[in-house]
Amino acid sequence: MYFMHNTNTQSQDISDCIAQASTYSIGEVAKKIGAPIKTVRFYDEIGLVKPTSYTEGGHRLYTTEDIKRLELTTTFRCLDFEIDAISQIISGDRPVDKVIDWQLESLETQVRTLANIISILRQGRTQQGDPLRCIYDLVHMNAIHIEERKQFISERVKASKFLDGIPEEWSDSLFYFFNKYIINQVKLSAKQTVAWEELQRLINDPQFIEDLRSIEFMCFHAAHRPHFNAATWIRKLEDMQSRLKQALKNKYPAHSRFVQALVEEATMVYANSEQPSNKEEDFLCLAEYVQKTKSKHLERCNTLCSILSPQYHLLSKANLLLFQGIEWKFQHI
Image 1 (cartoon, rainbow, N blue to C red):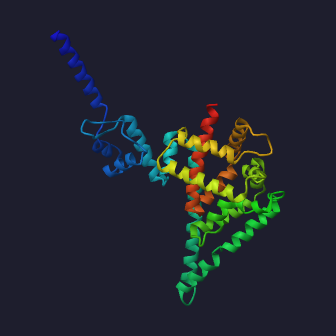
Image 2 (image 1 turned 120 degrees about the vertical axis):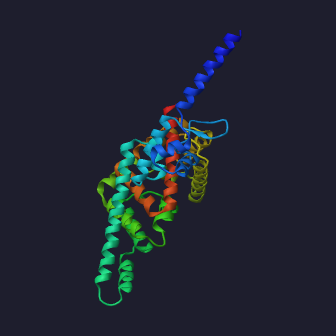
Image 3 (image 1 turned 135 degrees about the vertical axis):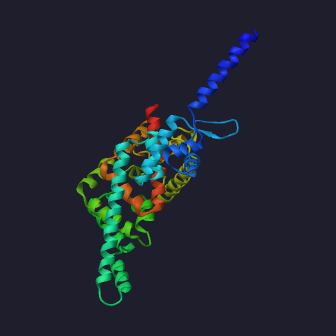
């Protein structure tokens, strides 16, 4: 009996040694990836790359796979990828090529922004008189004011005839978040100005208009509800956004009860009232809408709006979580 017990103990000791040999402390990991310990700790704290296990004393232990994810993370950070984009790559929520495309578009916007700033500074330096006054005048001249943005969008909406047949009280409500976060921005930075100029070109692109027509705005269905006025609809959307932001803060996954409850509510809010109430049909309509929003032009529009407004960026992240919840439910029907 003693021999058997001793053998078991030795086997356990060997297993423990193998386990310890295949894991690394946070200090060892930091040296391997060439980053400060505080960086590795930060990636754990935000849930980006967490250690596989801990010692009895609570110290982090990383595996070879953990180290690979950390190396990937530090590489993308060197390329100026945002934490959210890296998280989507690691989690598999978005294809790598798609996230790289987004990063390329973001960097190209930054290049155009810097070129614009350099041009203004050079003009200011070569002008006679007060160079600071000249730079101020150039910036002011290039600024795009609220009224100009309102006029541009108003003209494009009118030309596209999107609002034909929509009750008057719903006209502003259907563009509520766009007006709130994009049109009513008080002052645009140089980067935001470049993004707005590209957004104007995008909106003027006939293909963009066709993409908008193809998705048949889900919110237009709500505009035909006789028992559902525009003010109530806006309150429901604001409440959904508030709860989606809470879900983001708490890092609830798409399949969580919290997010799935919001999927149910979104199905109700965006349901087509012209058809008899059928939850399954309403949901399938919503799921189809989500798929159609993934066109190149519509995704670029969303990216540009996120550059224009930090609040819109958060709104976009919240909607992405909702869309992921819809896709998860669609896959599990």
